Amino acid sequence: MKLSDFKYNLPKTSIAKYPVSPRDKSKLLVLHKDTGEMEDKHFTDVIDYMEKGDILVVNETRVFQARLYGKKEKTNAKIEVFLLRELNQEDCIWDVIVDPARKVRIGNKIYFDNNLWCEVIDNTTSRGRTVRFNQPGNVFQAVEKIGLTPLPPYIKRDPEPKDKENYQTVYARVDGAVAAPTAGLHFTIKLLDKIKKKGIHVVPVILHIGLGTFRPVEVEDLTKHKMDSEYYEISANSAEMINKAMQAKHNIVVVGTSACRALETSTTAEGFVKPGRGWTDKFIYPPYEFKVTQKLITNFHAPESTLLMLTSALGETDYVMKAYKKALKEKYRFLSYGDAMMIV
Image 1: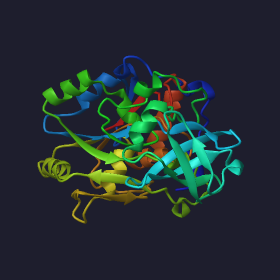
Image 2: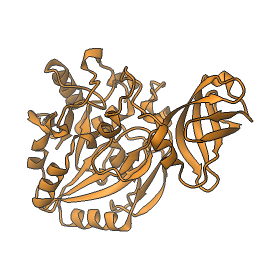
Image 3: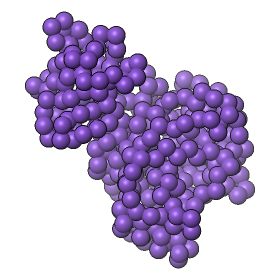
């Protein structure tokens, strides 16, 4: 497969700037991967494509308020500090991106509200820096009060207070993501309760989504593309529940490409999930033989994105691209705050 196989024209008017309310009222395009048949539904209809005993795998990562604005010591220059990942909790050391980068050098201190400040201790990339915060303990708690929601770059507006809730799944539990697992944004507590009452088991995994999810693929030959590494965890209990369901021939329904990558990273040669934690740079694109994922709930992704490639690997590229064409024609809403697709 080539990069250009995943090209399509996405008008700006099709990119959702705000989510629908309530969140489970979004539209759902169901694609049957064996036949290419498509159905127009609403998100609450996902329950009709799951049976008693099936597993619904969700990503419990929580988006933290990663965008901070501070002032550089002495000059008071305004600096944006975008937190990427925690490197050392005890020493409060983080990987960040700074803007404007030319003003930020090793040894500089940047001051924020609530007595929070950081010192630059290393350069990583042209805009990347390693910093040490002054507040021992939980930096996540400190930035929660003063940071802004890290909305995706294609949502061309400033974050609003409501985004703090909207850009978060209802089951988000573990701080660490700078982008939401967007397929999960459609679920409400009420819908999840209904799913559980039907005898479907909701099983959590964690994959902390990084900024790399928005990075464009810059090579036509997909075998030469390298994914950014992202941290994931699969508990022994989650692995056991998924494996038992697979042995009993139940479906594994995965919510989002991030949960899918965590699962597919953790499979044994026999096709079972092994518990563990670590970093994954797994790049899934056609043709790929899925070991665990049988059905996928996902959003409509950007042209030539790795997320679209993973979706196409499960749903067949021709079928998926036809589904996108239909979705654009029928005014489905695209990207993070947009509508959903289910591949069955």
